[in-house]
Length: 219
Ligand code: 5RP
Image (cartoon, rainbow, N blue to C red; front, top):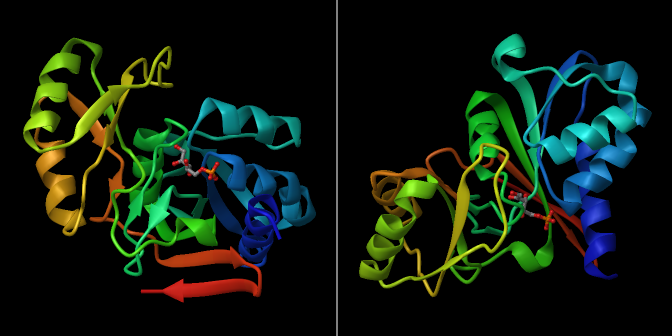
């Protein structure tokens, strides 16, 4: 099984969690794209949908879904999204696709957060994947200097503008033994819109596609 097969298997397992009357949040990325392809099969069970990015909204609309805003929907039942890394406590690094801010907002508003991923994403300690940070353009240099002080190696994501009109700083070489503390510390830097550590609000369920099938980890 290659990574795509594993992602597809995890997405299929998430589809089975959707119950009649579900208000659904849909994340962003290649794993979620498999989910979006499969969603028409459970169309009748979905009460309403919110999305974490323009890219996912376009794909959902292509499948014939109407995408609502979070302000219209309020708190909702189930958020399904991928991740770049997860530890066993289901604390995540997200934002490889640059949608981290809207993803964090949707995760906060969801009663249940199901993360779908292939088995390469499960790690002992977060930080091998460069940590994405969404930053106000005018604070680019300030945030970069602060991350250097924290012993990270910050690299700007060239030519990338988020759906919110901001920039992404990818911070390499960080070790994140205490994700809750690190999330709060980086969020306190003026100009940081969102850091891609999801530890204060981790996933509730992780569905991991692997050669032997889909493993479920709950906290
Ligand atoms: C986008 C994300 C994605 O969930 C993350 O990058 C995983 O992507 P993929 O499913 O393509 O591996 O956080 O901002």
